[in-house]
Image (cartoon, rainbow, N blue to C red; front, side, top):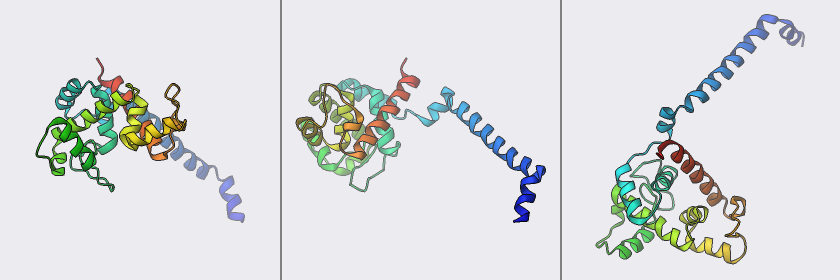
Length: 198
């Protein structure tokens, strides 16, 4: 126990402990400041496939910055990604949902392999967001919740009074996964507006 008292009384050791902590705090502050520079933020919030996204967003009446925010949170822009639930591609579409979209668009023949094609995936995902906007009166929170949790679930939550469409609060979304997803997409969407809306 005497050696602990010795450490407490040793000013040299105390200074060594304090300096790395101060250095670490300085590094964190500098890193945070650099992350606020738009150029660095654009690395964190990139906008790949911009022409494609803007083309289909215009065609289907969806904000392109919402589309890119969904892509960022769904796949981190990895076109070949596949979830453990079987969702595929940039916008993580389920093959049965994509099959239904293909039929609505008269896009035949369709194969789930088509979802690995960035353009096809963006087209279908953007069309799907557009269809959800029509169902949920362009309410962004409900659209994003339905994109993740399913249109049927969101309609059930509204019918059961779990969600008030006139006063939507994230904490009212029953599924934790969907609640977190909506929060992430909305946060990304705000970043994209700040960085890319001119």
